Image 1 (cartoon, helix red, strand yellow):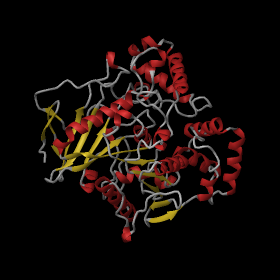
Image 2 (tube, helix red, strand yellow):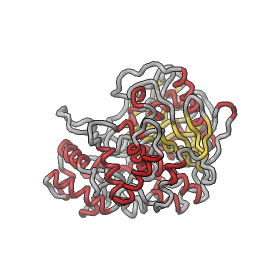
Image 3 (tube, helix red, strand yellow):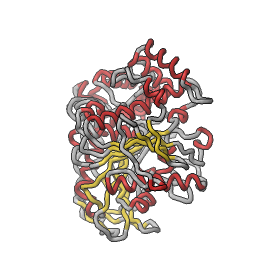
Image 4 (cartoon, one colour):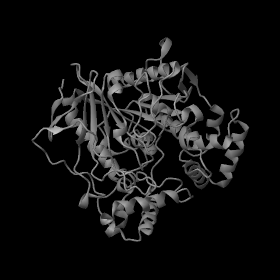
Length: 498
């Protein structure tokens, strides 16, 4: 079992005790800085070091592709670092949770997540990683003559997983029991990595929170993104490597702002089905059995889209609507809209439910069906609890509610960086969080979620009964919830939907 001083394959690092029985190491580089000639290129090996490296502070976050604030660029291109938390108590090699942060492929950081409590409560080694975002991470510039530039962010994550395989044993982790997980864009990247050949064998379980195998671009979509980016920059592809990062950020903001149309279907920057790094769409890969050897747990939140409500037209809502119309066709979309009105929940906008299912629920169900049909093990859950902190206390069980509970550190919510001070947790918050942590611990250690109250068994998801665990202050098993809404999609082709 490690002390704070650990030898990695590229050099020694020294971490810190976190005031509890967990040690941490932060800002460890897993690849060379992707700057200069390496911008848009695959991650290169780290240059080894000999002196003990201070690993008590986070490394820089990736460049954040958020709207221009007039306050300069947040983040740095030199961002390919990861963070490790491990229990200090000696033990047999522990399972590993490799967490991919969300942020719409545009923003976010592994540094936002404090893994101390999750490592302790799950008795596991927790790893978070930074990866390239926006146009630096999610394009394929081979379309415009720049060789070997497809999907830099996917390759970053593969490099981070390779680092785990080679080094995690020195931190007390088991490289043969790595669970890949993430929420929102992190969940989407988790499902995308199911289809990346270079990632095969680097992880052994997948826990998908609110992100199910739908957010990828075709080569045509990628070409359109590049064209819009170059137009906004008023430059040519051969000069992209030299564009100042602030100009790149501002041009990316323009691409994102115009993506809610029938061409890009709401997604500005996404992994690209390039034929090599990502040979085919994730759902097709799962359907063909490429993930059948992996236990997969898929979860979504009761009313995902409510958090995206805002001044009309809210970009995510408008983009999802445009995507539905473009992919399904105006006539079928109108039929679905009418049908949703007939089965609407009380006091719910049926159009919001349609957008919710289009983007989240139906892709999650199709992923579960594909994994089951291919002979794999799959479990399904829905998070219905309303955490007692903003904005959930106002909006309800919406996108990110499960994420805040997963990373909570009782008796208060873990305060993700940049958010207001977190309030204390209510009795219901504590109970739901404990249930979630027990389920995650079981999945990390055994490959199956468990730990439900009253000795309830967590059944696998099968199309004959569609067992779904509802996670709230009264955890329970429901069979085929929202059946009426699911059946409205039953006669549509498997790739219908954005």
